[in-house]
Image (cartoon, rainbow over all chains, first blue to last red):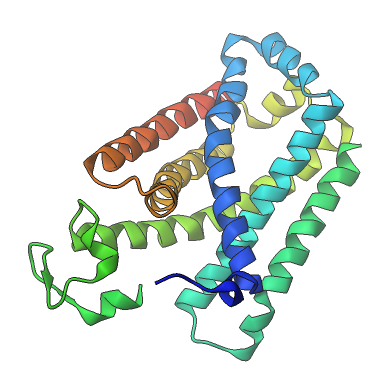
Length: 115
Length: 139
């Protein structure tokens, strides 16, 4: 049975998409993140030379994207946990908006400290 | 997951009652699927706390630019950070493969033993790479 367009125009469908896309992106980023941290095994200077590479504007933009994905996946995940594990309450309708606001706020806080 | 409530588990993990459509294409027992579902939620609870601490640390750490001296000054020799990052890596090594398994099965239709094997290898690799990264910054 296929979903019709009404299911896909619902905001919860977009929350589902964001959760999936951010989850896959974060899973693929993890090996890179661990590789970067492991540069410290070769000494402080090696880690520093990698950190200097990350100062390029494009890399910083990528970091901002990653922080947003991490915040969105976490806030969306907490929303899912609340929906699945807590008894249903009216206020849970606002969880989607709260998760979006939290993700944007975290990203802005990161951006303000980054630049 | 509502379908899970329609069936009962036998002691060897087989399904009694009508086989739900959701379960029929999987190569693991229903018992294993319930275990995976529970592990995904339990690891998510741990990760929610870990990510919160991680995000606060990130936002704090980047304020004057990142340097190796500052990062390693915070983490080297710290039992607290070692335990925190160790728990973080363990939780993500459980969470990421289970999530990826669901996405791959539902999005591109990759199912069966090859998927289970690939995700098991991915999880073990994440755990080992993660442990190496933690060792690199705390030892």
